[in-house]
Image (cartoon, rainbow, N blue to C red; front, side, top):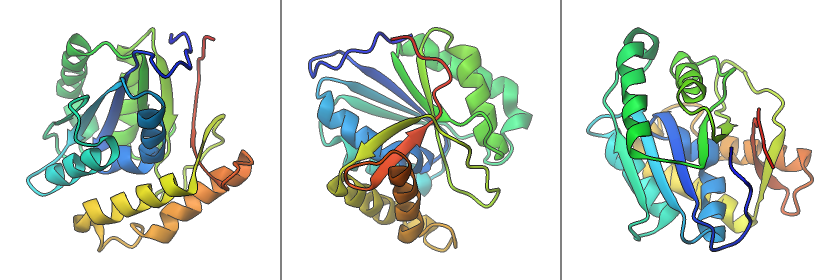
Length: 215
């Protein structure tokens, strides 16, 4: 587990796991902006498991918007078929083991274990199966299934961070503009709801499920 250290000089290695291009950005893009500002020496590695010729550059551009032009972040996008992850489970588990062999994170941001999307849920399960001594925070993705739960960890965001996150999502993912759920007001509503729940000064926050914490 991560021994929490709030020093700005802390060597923080963050692993961000997403099933699809835009999952990380939707689920914890604002928190990544805050962590980038709070820990300028941190390294952020993105492991995305489903991408293609259109969507991979979108998520690479979004990561660039969040972390800047420095070299302390990387984006790795695999080519597993979206919505079919459970049927490729062995190969995806092998990919997890490969990531574990290259990266030694002390903070992992991943999907919620109770997410009803099969791809999201499998990655959450493999996160806990693969990384046994790490601080794991599970982010949320709004979707048709209505599977929002009751998060127990909140990260308040500033109004500027909220605006940057929403603009990044809209600007970086034009391929998703035709989807009825992919709207700026939905992203704002999600952030506002969680901000209300934690009494955030700005009124906005992101939320996570933290199952195990050692402080």
